[in-house]
Length: 344
Length: 161
Image 1 (tube, rainbow over the protein chains, first blue to last red):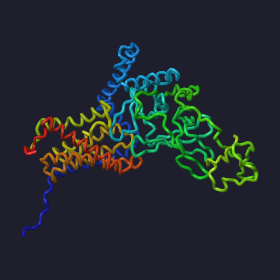
Image 2 (spheres, each protein chain N blue to C red):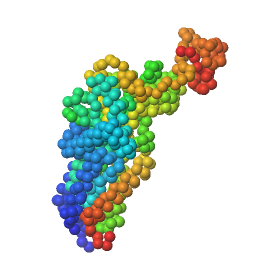
Image 3 (cartoon, chains in turn orange, cyan):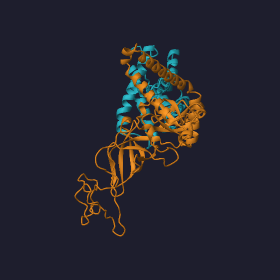
Image 4 (cartoon, rainbow over the protein chains, first blue to last red):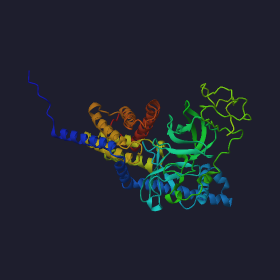
């Protein structure tokens, strides 16, 4: 029986293994690089190897805009009305652009209009590229808005292009308030099973503040990124409660990022202006719900614990001094029996 | 068996076509994952090291648009290149059935690897992503890849197929 000899390891095969391990290691290192370095690498590739593809998309979008403008002229001349009737997408884009232009006219020179480029690649779901950059006055953390409301925020800025994330990004947070300034909270995205199911959650609303469906929610101006008054969405329904502490509400976003093709970037010059931004989106805001006031206030009397002072002429029959405190009894004060509707 | 010139051209053109459709035309998910198809076919023509290198470069290019999980595509494609190259030693793969299966399972594997490497914060529901989206995307990519190879006449390895 011949002695066992291990299979000779070819030098070429060993070299192959070394090369393989090198690339594997390099790929692993890329994941753990600091975000700033990752952004530099990504930005470098976008500006060099991938720039022809981006330029192609940019030119396609420009062409589409020009086509829509020509179509608008044709529509005005009444000659191509019939032809345009079948092109609902172009008409929709025209309407969208006109509304965006109106918004820009109302907003002032600090807004920079931009076209949205979407790479459509794996992992790029919550980002988009804009054809404006530092030469247009755009800077990191500038809010991105459309005629509907807040879309997202600028993350990286190049000379002529910039990268932004929309509100579906897991890192997206914005401090918001209701239009009347009565309720404040923090909005964050929640992923759905499908991308179309992504939605926003308003967190940190005080427990005794109940919000009606359809209530508009705008940025509160807290923090240094978003100025006060940008429409974010409207209240949909109660999402979660932490008894006696806080409530969370689902928010219907004012803007669906996938449907956005043109946006405005709010530059530093605009943010330093002190005109009220909420007026820019007044047309988009829903009308206030009719009926009695729903905002409830619990007034804590000194030395009496959590006993609410109730106006005898308030909406419900209860509220007398001898009534049991429903909070202490563990009841939800917003139950529809109306016992806790009080005058502010 | 050395690949024909046409076959090589197609293999190099597939990733370019991928970026043209996804980035240039902005089609997004409507376009098939031709990067995976190109990489899987190219890897079978290369040794393990170069295949890993090609996967690294292609993955890095795709990662340049990824704010969510930078590096996940790079590592995924590097691994896919290695697996593709090693598959030569496991499967001879001269039939059309093998080509379809190879592209389908390879593209599916890419989705699975990316889902695993993308990080917990970015991941969507495993059931929907891996059992609904991934197989559909894989079937779409494999179908388009095979159709492209057959239509151009690049796949002529097995006369019986």
